Length: 202
Image 1: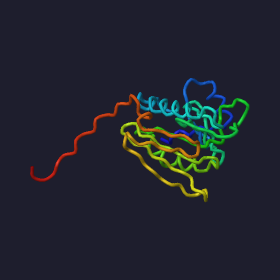
Image 2 (image 1 turned 120 degrees about the horizontal axis):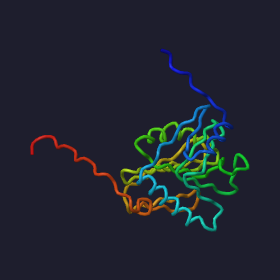
Image 3 (image 1 turned 90 degrees about the vertical axis):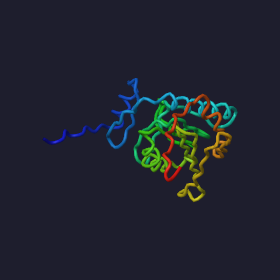
Image 4 (image 1 turned 180 degrees about the horizontal axis):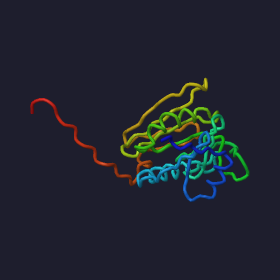
């Protein structure tokens, strides 16, 4: 039996349905992809991070958005919802609804088991097409680890850094903020990891 044909919709159809829906979906090349519910840890990390940045951005020409702000990658047509987004200068929106940001300066994604490969791979490849984007941050939800990619002056290369000590703090130069891991992971409980089996004589 032949597989049923996939239904493709226009961006206008996607946005009309999305704005009327209580759930969130991503859109890419005519297809809509439902977003699953986030875990308690995921929500805590995103809220902690957004709150810290919002407090530090008071009085600065940057604004932080959490979860519900769509970002469009104009080069590919992807519509997606980063966990935390910061835009500096005058924010640019796709239309008068002001709910589709076109020029993020910083994007943060909280990694889950189901999204990690996508966030590291295809999604980051598309984010790199946004000319305004200067920093991309990945935060693990099941261990203390924060990774940062910083766009280099040539616009094509990205410098990678990683932090895993709770005492560490990250300087987010593009937005003039400092993000400490203690604040990021406040009240977050990590799952216990299995003890690796020993090999050899005891």
